[in-house]
Length: 630
Image (cartoon, rainbow, N blue to C red; front, side, top):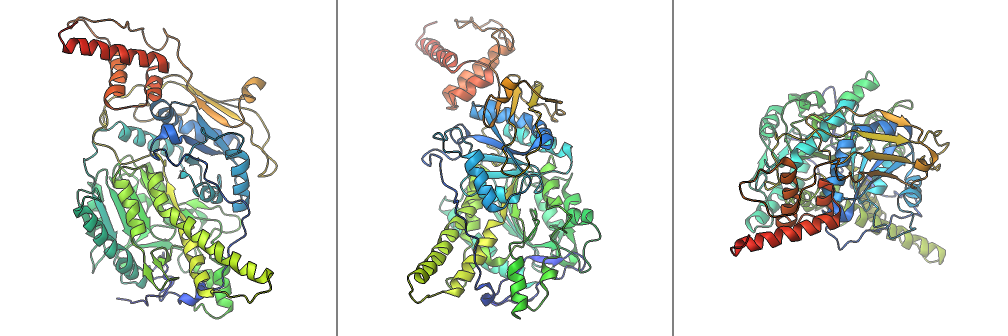
């Protein structure tokens, strides 16, 4: 087996043709020295109430960031059942929709955030902390996702096929109505032991000590997994071993360590082939797992998958390491050619993209609800820090799995990793600031180049981890109502209206507002319905309604949605119609499940005050019955 020095920088990527590592021996730690980060004057700020429950959507709010123009309208129409569900069942308030341009630098993304998302004009109580980005990396840029994730819970839905959006939405809604979740899910850890230095270091520094940590915490009741399973043949890695285990592993969490496939030595034959294969999970000479393998077969149904590999989540338009690798080559510190490492980047006329593997497994009706992985080159640096002497940090990944297992929403779990990016960024910036102050004061400049280089490398590595899927999903709770195959009401029609306006001339231009409205109480059927037609050019009054988009379910007329139910004592043998059952369930939820009254009222089409009065009357009648009254 190939060995690697503890201080080497190892890359988790292989050539797609022969599965040989792109960097077989790694890079010396000194190669990370001398790097700098762009100056960012507009730092993101925290504006939510940190004292609130991070998993409470009614408090934290849920919103959507969509592309500008007709493309954004189309994607919004495809996820309308999910938007209706989040509003009616969990939030009880209109869903905010924001529009973003297709290209932004990080500085432009921060300015967009301050201008369009967090204007500072109010307390921002309605600003959503859960943010679902719609569209691929060429439709809403990666820079915006990274900026928004600095203090929000951010995920992305990106599919090449329209039907995949509907399939994912239907899967989420089926599981959120499901009672099939286990009392305690399992935690799986899989390593591809392909004999390369990078996977050997990954297992030695991350997986093995991480599993030891969680098993110790499980014994003390602090890691809520039923079983902790570490697997992966140490001699002959096999895709079949992982596929067989994941097929029957329902509503659990999977962590995998492997190489991701990069470009073959001769380059990709076409952009289409690159989008289909890049980021596939490599098993060395034993093959790969690609998107086509996971489109239809069961794989972690209702669970969450964290895949640690190069390009596992997708490929950006440019690598954060491009200039660094070129500088190393010019200085004679890089034994290979930078273009070989960066051969997987799109050409000048090609687009960045999310991986076909991630798209397929998320669209799979029997696949996971969330997928976490890396966009760009994935190094061993994020769990093997060198600024303090080759210190292994497996716990930051184990914290993600623990958060998922205790049924935090996946956006909350992802913050367990991204908060280390925030810490690293602050530490690195402080070193540059100290250097600048010494220069301005005419003092001798003392530069710790090695420490700066290590922190720069760690920052870049952590910044490229992203969440694909709705950040509000979580592992199913065995106590939730309904079943995975229980019948659902037919979704009511939803109409999208948008102002007819020209595309903004620059990223700074303000997008035209859009208003999305839906008819009351619409749980989507399975499978999800086809999207409704988009109606363009409403009148001026509709356009001027708000500065940001909104998604609202209007209150129904008393006689339209359901017959009125008299609040009176009912004989035991009296017939109870379906509307009474629905109403009774809403009242019971408020009493027994502590469901937010706003959300329960929205579900049955009543005002908050009306439902509160019904709850009081229900309790009064019940108490009289307990003491022999009516």
